[in-house]
Structure formats: C-alpha cells, structure tokens
Length: 219
Image (cartoon, rainbow, N blue to C red; front, side):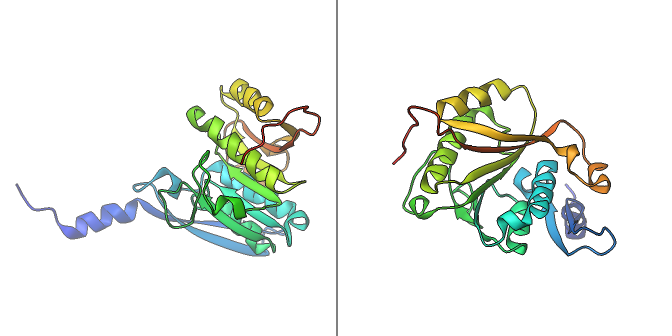
C-alpha cells in the first residue's frame, strides 16, 4: 500500500476548515464591528455557524440596548456567535457547552454542580438547542433553574420549526414556562442576511409563568 502524502492530508484538512465573517451594524457598507469564526465541519457539528446562530446574533445586535451591561449566558454555545455579539455590545457573557468540552464553561443540561449555582444571568441565549428531542426535558429543566435564579430573566432561543413543537409546548407547561414573544426570523433579518438563510426559522422569548399555581423548584 502506498503511503499517504502528508501534504495531501493537510490539504484535505484545510478544505474542511473555513472562516466565516459576520458583520453587524446599521450600515451595510460600514458595519459597527465584524466577527470572524473558524469553522471545521470535520471535527464536530458544534464547530459550524448554523443559521439559527446567525439569526440570534442579529437579534442581539438589534436589541443591543437591552443587553448592554446585562449578564448573559449562552447554552450550547458551539462557535458562540450570539454570545460574542452580546459581549461586543457590552454584556457580561458566560459561554457554556456540554461539560465534555473544556473550551468554555462546562454545563450539561439537567446536571447541577457548584458552578451552576453561581450563575444569575439576565438573559439566557440558545441557538438551535431544540434539535434533539431526547434532550428537551433536560434543556427546559436547566432553563427553568437559570430563570428561577435570576428574577425577571428571559430565555431567548432560535430554532427550526420542526415536528417536535408539540413536545416543546408540553414541556414548557411542565416546567412552568411561557412564550411571551414569537417571531419569524425573516421578519427582522436584514435582506442581505436573510437571502443566505432557508427553512422555517423562529425566535422565541420565554419566561417563567407567574400565573402557574405550582412551578417546579430546582435545588
């Protein structure tokens, strides 16, 4: 068997790595700032900027006055585009991902450790975290805990409107949550960004349902 040329291997790896650039500002020609992210489809699906991240990041930029000076926690951060934008507009940001990853703070949904109890974010962000139905219950348990730890806080998530929406509605009721804002992504995305997106993309703002007689309290 012929040996594999190392140069060919490097080329193959290079082809799997790209740099995506994301611009934010009211003027397309002169953005307020830009963020460049190295993507690698070979390593992990979390190392790619998915459309839901682009949508959530744009929403953070448009709502930047809400985020300035606020504590923000991003769940399942991956490439962290929404969290990075929040930081650029003046938020105090904590990036989290599954605890098996050590690049950011480890936070496995549904698992509580000492570091979890120190988190009191005003905003919890989650881009495309509603993709694996088997993880939905743990996700909403974690969201409920974080919202309980910081009165008046909000969970803002972007997602593809897939067939699991009935399960999402059921779990929101189970965990004492309610949706206070639901937007079609294309209703607020600038046209030059919307043209590169596809699918039924939604953005939701979710809070604790204060009208619920009993809301699960997590300790």
